Length: 436
Image (spheres, helix red, strand yellow):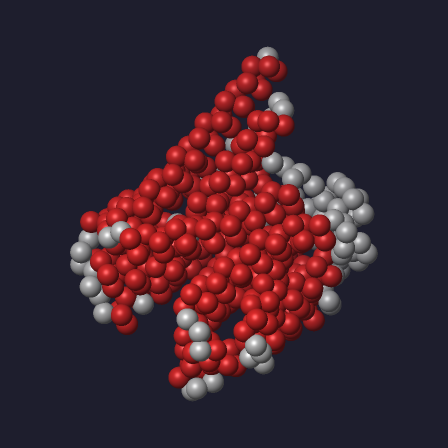
């Protein structure tokens, strides 16, 4: 943990003293948001970074028709752009992990925001399509870097309250993902779609400047008077590397499947509503909005829920309820009932990603940076692979069959989670037996 290691060992150089000194001696939420002004700025800048991440995640989808029309190209090229952004996202994870071992956090966070700003300002100029493709990769690298770094630092800073703060980051991400299409829609209506990159790039540039002025000592705040996450079983004591990394791989596969499922739902839910429920296109598009509004609402509630429910119980309940709602979606033929099931699905699955990441970090104490980086990388790969699979299925199978595929994804998630719980239980029992 950063609270016990030296700054050099953790790649944190030149951390200045914090006014008010909210550190491992701990003071609670009143300190964090009142007297501890630098840490307050750190948190709000982190939320803004995740808001930026949400905007970048849906940016190209929001302006895709206009962008392709400008370049006189096809949706195949548009799909290739999305793939390139995913490739950039995956490339950005090891780059960020390497930089975090060597450089000050301000350099990493300012650099990631600046990468997004440069990419967006380049796209604003509408260069040749080849340059757009290269800028898309850079945009993906910057988005990956900011999410990986922010999540890693929050995991290290707030031991015992990780789920609470990760839920707030996820809320910011969801609000960004909701806001970008609305802002793009207004600019498109005003025939100014080409200025959409200015919104994203401008925010990214401001954040790059903000991070250059923030200074907090990155040491774990392990004692606090404020609300903590609910008590979860103590981390297991692994007897060897094989068992440790086998469990970690199960967590990573779970993230891979979940993000793939969520990305597929985001990409093809309107198409499913159109083809399966015969909904009108403008009504079908509302299905994605309903899903994201429910996701944001669920994430707003997670900070309260995780103070009362352990990580294991939350994930089990969330996956079971999500399985029920996706099953109801396969059975419903009424659009309005389906909207309700989509909202239920969004609420139930709203924090699976963040709580799984938190639970993985809790299971492997002292490995926060490696675990968070690996989780982010597998999320990027899942977000690229699964939509391609579902896209192929949409062309070759019936919409109802595609929904059953998605139900199978959620069932696999539940099975993986139960296997993880079973493995951890066995490891703990063996440790107790050995100790006795």
